[in-house]
Image 1 (cartoon, rainbow, N blue to C red):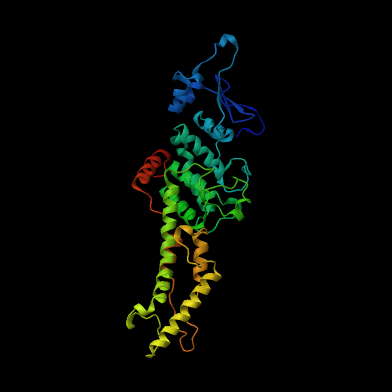
Image 2: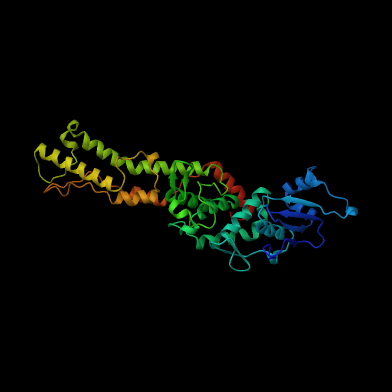
Length: 366
């Protein structure tokens, strides 16, 4: 590709009649064919030929150039897009890579951040179909190298947000569900701005400054609400058995003899049962306190990530400390529930799926 980093003017079409000034400061100017741009994008067609200020073309006799400013667009992503629509296919990166730097490390490569910025533009200018020859291969290469089944390195923590948008624009429902599941499990809650990257890791990221979920990345429609509600329900499912056990132990005189948590192998006096369950309660509260979970928080008060909560709960002890009552315990967190939480993803709505089907038809990912 022509290097926008090395030049402030890039000639896409030597016979081009339109100059696109791209970027907020020190913009890169691309010389392109206005008709080619307009044919490719209905948005550009309206911009250039729909009576807007940008459509005012200087008289050629004046010697002035036809300049349209696009300060919000990324120059590198714009160059790729312009090369595509001008059929300069040798200039299009064929290999996708994962790296934590702004720039791809090799020629003919595009990184995750580059694909994200490119799909921002295809969404803005209705150009998704133009990525069809490359989209499937890029997504395949990225997902092979970028696993969402485990915690990402801190420098690539925002990667799940980037992938969620890429999946949304290209129509990959499986990838969007995986990205949403990652965000639900690994992001922490912050009273000021909701879910976010863990603050202790956020400063290590060279991609974006710290911030709430989708504060620096375009959000697939309604995904943050879906992620937050799913996370809240998962926390409720984890804490509910503990709350139930505590309530049973606190109100033991109200229960019948068949509802005891004491599981001694032989009949024992009622007072010994009460002592056993009082011991369980004490051990459970102390164990919760050791994990910073006492008083037991409400689901909406939990700020740590779901995965961090699971690790804490696996260390909770509720066994009786009385002699001959070592087999008595107040609760056991179901590994089935934990497994579901660590592997499931928020359910996408039908409107999400309809959008993804439409986009997949455009991008060729169906």
